[in-house]
Each structure stands twice: as C-alpha cells, then as structure tokens.
Image (cartoon, rainbow, N blue to C red; front, side, top):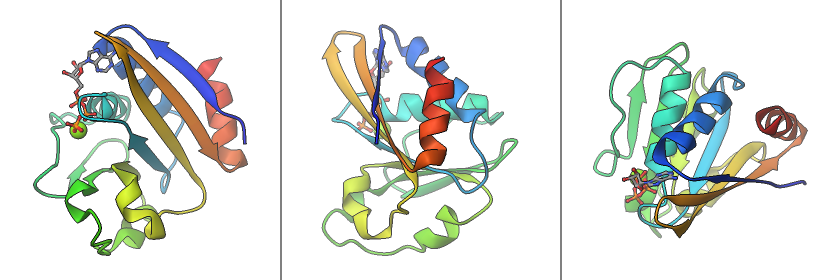
Length: 151
Ligand SMILES: Nc1ncnc2c1ncn2[C@@H]1O[C@H](COP(=O)(O)OP(=O)(O)OP(=O)(O)O)[C@@H](O)[C@H]1O
Ligand SMILES: [Mg+2]
C-alpha cells in the first residue's frame, strides 16, 4: 500500500487537513491516530469534528475510553490508552461497524479488534509547531481518500 506524507506548521493547519479528510468519510469508517504525547492526535480529532459538523468541543477522552459526538455523522472518539495490555473488548465491533466515524488514539492497544480496512495515521513532532502526518491507508477505499486529500 502507498503511504502519504504531509507536513504542517501550525495547530490550525493540522486541523484543516483533518477537516478536509472528514468530509471524504462515510459511515463505518475507522481512523487510527498514533504518535507520542502532544503529537496532535486530539488536535486532529478536533479538526475531524469540525468537518463533521460537531458543535460541542472535543476534549481528550482519557478517562472515558469512548466519547460520542453528534454531527452530520456520529463521531466516536476513543482513547484506549487505559486498556494497555489488557486488550479488553469494550464492544468495538458496534462502533467500527456502526453508522458513525470511529477515531482511535493509541490503537496499538486494541490491535485484535481493529478492522483490516482502515486509515492509520502517524503524527510525529518535528520541532516546535512542525508536525509530520503520515497516512497509511489499509485498503483501496482509503487509498482513494488519501489521493483525494492530498490533491
Ligand atoms: N502543527 C501542529 N499540529 C498539531 N498540534 C500542534 C501543532 N503545533 C503545535 N501543536 C500543539 O501540540 C499540542 C498537541 O496536543 P494534543 O492533545 O492534540 O496531542 P495528543 O497527541 O492528543 O497527546 P496525548 O497523547 O497527550 O493525548 C496542542 O497543544 C497543539 O496546539
Ligand atoms: Mg490526545
């Protein structure tokens, strides 16, 4: 599969890319966000929320695992950091096969539950406000979406 690299220089720029991605998505799509602390995973999710027309403020869901937001489509924002090693199934299938967009921070902790078709995104801090966003589409469907996004 191809991979795509985008550099951003501000928080807003990262959010705008996420916003642009959001409008290309369809119900049941799954996005994973990897990257260290402060890389921009939640920032990216906020941008997705804007693109999906979510009015509420999206915060880090660290203490709840899943937060649901209503937009044009529901947005399921998951931070599965707390499931580390337990690999507990909290009913992921219902989210991943549901009628909303699922966004997973720290997906490495729920690998067995992730669908094969998904968009993996890696955020890397370059320096200060510079970030590298690498898109790893899994499946032809998401490769098309990436092509559209970078156009
Ligand atoms: N180019 C950029 N893209 C995204 N965020 C940026 C950028 N430049 C600076 N930032 C800042 O970096 C921080 C990223 O925080 P954010 O909560 O999104 O990270 P995170 O990856 O979700 O971290 P955590 O693992 O703690 O949940 C924010 O304060 C944001 O404003
Ligand atoms: Mg976060």
